[in-house]
Length: 217
Image (cartoon, rainbow, N blue to C red; front, side, top):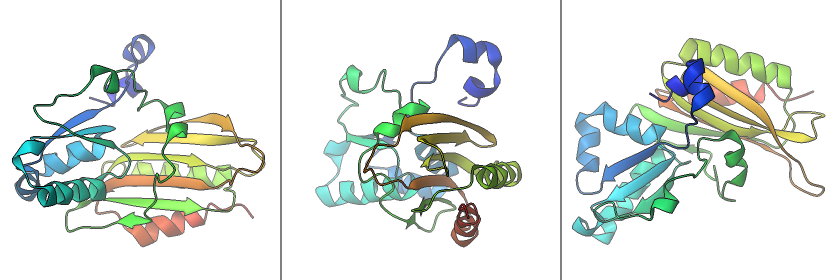
């Protein structure tokens, strides 16, 4: 469904995808992961996760479920709820799927280098302290999504391109990708690239090597 907002011109011109909200059953989520690939995929696509039925689990159980969600999708904002009770203002008009909204991420965004677990769906986070070569990056990500796009559910990041005064904001859904110039880098600000991919059977070493090959000379 999310792809419709990218590929259908009429839909794209008339509407805007604000965010993808996923409700997680705190009591049964871990079991659902064992028998349903769709459960992990829905979390992987989410911009906002409501960890519901929080009243039915202990603090330790809730912590385990949260850790599992974070291992699948470190980007989504997560809220504990009972009967999905949540202020509407915190769900609507969030701009979570807006490329420029990514610039307002928390300081610990992509704080972990990688998240691994036994499921096929994992997330790999990449960082680069040196500027990237935009041409090399475009070739790498285009080839990657063309060949592995079916398995890459989401890709998102803020990139520091060489000789570019503005950060570059990237987002992808499967094979579809979009990027726009973002806010200017500020004087004294640490410039670095942060990029995350969520998908099935991701090869961290291969992805890291491809990303590092995009570094500018």
